[in-house]
Length: 195
Image (cartoon, rainbow, N blue to C red; front, side, top):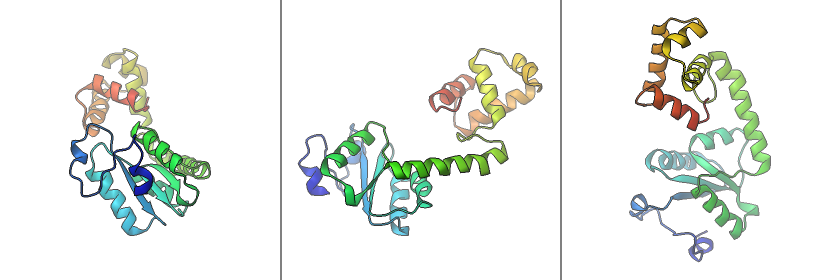
């Protein structure tokens, strides 16, 4: 992999020991190469996810079990490529795409991953009144009404709650996501696709 990447002008290759990665103004993409998603690889992925602020991870793997797709995603993997069909051009284009905020997953895995997300929504989140973004349906409805310009009293009348309950639900969203106020909550929810 190093020989593939070293000669590419669009990629600045950093090693795990390079302490300038955190100082770079350029996006950082971690590249993890493995045969399978073993426990040591998962540990590495988790460490990268929780310790590398602003970096993304691309996983090159020989084989991955369907059950491990969501696990990889939860460890911050933004792109997953099969090692056995990888070309240097595909690797470089994927790294550049990930650096630009995109993701990449082979088509066969994407279908399985979407199926798992759908099952998660139906089996777990819906039963607890949550959406995939972590908001309850009621919280999402209230944020949508705030975004439409309704004040607290109008929202309370519209959904049949007290003003105090509406304020408590909004406050809960603000606190849960570390936001500043209801306007920030609406902006965040829109940017994240929650409403």
